[in-house]
Length: 421
Image (cartoon, rainbow, N blue to C red):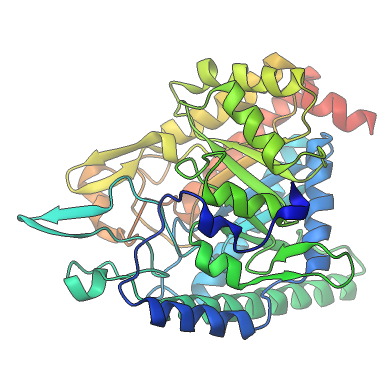
């Protein structure tokens, strides 16, 4: 029951993907410092985002969620932040034009510093060290010192997130003033923030009770999501997320059973509150048409109000030589099949969730940019998973926009619901 929830209750639950810190005193000191710092986002803005997501659940809008696989300390710059923000806004405009619906934009930004790993250890030339888990936890260099979890990194991630938010807010003011000068509405929606709520020490330290509503809010981001590897219904991550008032994402893969998804939704949203849950499917292009319909039908049959979004990235990861990569064509295929499944089922496809950047990179194969296996290493900068480049991101949005436009002209559920509101 929520009245028995507390921000530290997760510590008494079994946990996955949380590193063992060798210096507990240093970890506790970092948590105490974080707990004394201001929240990065305000409860009122979190509630505003939840209301916008509720519109997506009603079929009156779309959700675009995107940004870095994992933010890094090394890539941090105004150019990087502004580039990602601008590409996301252009993607939103393209999708809105095709769907005939407003598109709300949520970035994987200002907090996406931790990543789950398939194995806790990495072996190179017979040497075994802890896996790299994102800059909030350790460093990518393959040395014992770099790979040791360091709690000071929690504070560095907080301060980089605060600087990122300052820049995004300044950009929003500039856009708003320019639009007012032209006597027009701003050209794109506000960019809200999100990340995977993986490192619960960080999330708990930034969780505060709102004086206005009495509810608990995770002040690290407007929205946080539950990963496919940490969605155990009796586990630490679900226990923490059930008590905060932020909108939540729930990643589901091809192994997710309908009953398991229903149990998660009930645990996280017992009041069936619109805007609370976004189910983000990550099936793989070849599996989405078989694996997604049973989940859709179960949720519909039980009257659960959720947003459905597609992550076409994670289910399509492959290895080419020494590089992890993804084919642009597989990413596009999964997204198109996701929208096709919803059209066939008569449900609202709520949007897409992509790992991307505003830079010219060569991390994903194919697309009009024609990245080949031979050219992958030219500008491969990610420390974790491969991202769509700026060109590939806009190409994906344009192709999805064209498909959504064709569906709208056919009178598919997406447009029928939009026209009825």
